[in-house]
Length: 192
Image (cartoon, rainbow, N blue to C red; front, side, top):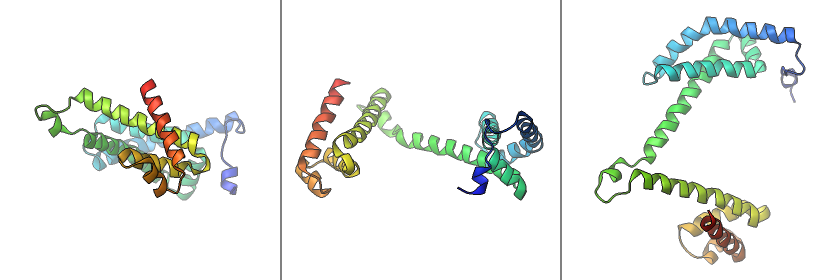
């Protein structure tokens, strides 16, 4: 470990006076940087509402409070503003990426067509797919041992089509691994 990692401030190792001084430092930084940070975020993300921007600013200062070593390094380099902007910007970017993925998953055209799936059916189907993926991971660990990654991939291939033998052969596994895991998946899905 580097010397900087060893110097990381830990609540059990830091005196109350030092911790109080650090909190005062963060409070001064908040007063100094919060307004420019909000303005900068609104320029970067004009679609972000007031609450999202406030959350991103607050999260950046919470991060700083939780990781005093990173903030101390940034202050040494004169980059505390850059660190706060980076944390807040990543927070909003993550929010909008998550929102974009959710929008991609919703097939509006399919809902508008007569005889198409209802939103409830779509959500139920997604939950089933999520459950199957979780069960595949569990089955791969349970039946694959040291070859769990190969079994996980083989199970995904098997569910996409083909036979147990083809899936096992494609991933260098005995057919029994795929067969046992597939049967266990079936029992777990029907039990739920």
